[in-house]
Amino acid sequence: MNGQPLTGRTPDATAAPLRLGTRRSALAMAQSGMVAREVTRVTGRPVELVEITTYGDTSREALAQIGGTGVFVSALRDALLEGRIDFAVHSLKDLPTAEPEGLLLAAVPQREDSRDALVAREGLALGELVEKLAGAGRPARIGTGSPRRMAQLNAWARANGAQLETVAIRGNVDTRIGFVTSGELDAVVLATAGLNRLGRSAEITDHLDPKLMIPAPGQGALAVECTTTNSGLAAALSALDHAPTRVAVAAERALLAALEAGCSAPVAALAGWNHQTELRLEGVVGTPDGAALLKMSAHGPIVLDETAERQAAALGRALAARLLDAGAAALMGERAR
Ligand SMILES: NCc1[nH]cc(CCC(=O)O)c1CC(=O)O
Image 1 (cartoon, rainbow, N blue to C red):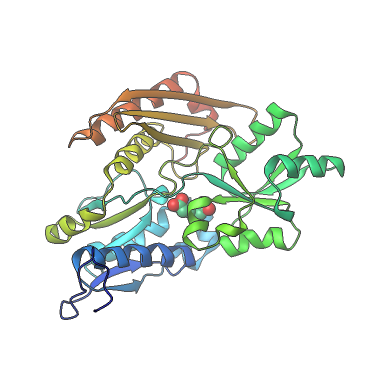
Image 2 (image 1 turned 90 degrees about the vertical axis):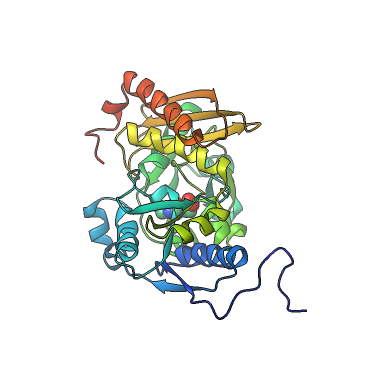
């Protein structure tokens, strides 16, 4: 008995470890650790984590100025292209929609819960929180740095006569939940997937239904990237791929790309399957104050073959075109990347 799961392969301690580049944040480490164990299980190869410090990690101010989480990704990509690491794991929603020369999306593992989560005082759900504070004669103060979340929360409040105030915040999960613990804010909104991966799902007080809050394109999914020249590794990593997830996020990301929007734009998209034969895509563009919220959906049959991503991308582009026809560009402001 060697304690290895029957479905896995015994790690070959004599093989050189695969080097997995990761950021130092708790979430990045958790995600990389999960993928590392899975890679060892399917390939039998040991995996070692290599810490990569990014510009965005060093300077919060830099992050705001450079504009978005693309900076987190680019340091890992540089390390890949320079051969310092063999593969990298990203949150798919942080991944710019253009794949750089020389790199390959080797796997998109099965998506975690894609919903946004509320972490509120006293264990309250969104409706309860708003009601309780209305009784106290003030709006609920809800923290999020995301214009997408602001837009949908504020639109929900306007439609339901609810009093709430969105407050722009930044920082890692600890910092953000800390605003609630300290009483500075009544609630914060975070991705359920991130909290689950950190083992902090018990702190979630409400899951925001997609009817109220459509997530960011790719939210809850991971991207496993390696170089195009490392075809042996790419083939091994493809064992982690989950085609229905890969195809769904292809539709969401094609919508985002066609809107020429980036990860910090007030754009939401979620694709879901009906019986793995039809993809239904919902897209939202809005203004952060929720005064305007454009929501549209599209669906189409998809055959899960080697052209599936292209079929899904066409669905995403078609929905983006309809959103643009309806005035999405003006809502997104100057169409900042
Ligand atoms: N923008 C940062 C980021 N990138 C990915 C996740 C969560 C994990 C995921 O969506 O897969 C988060 C944190 C958050 O939005 O709460």
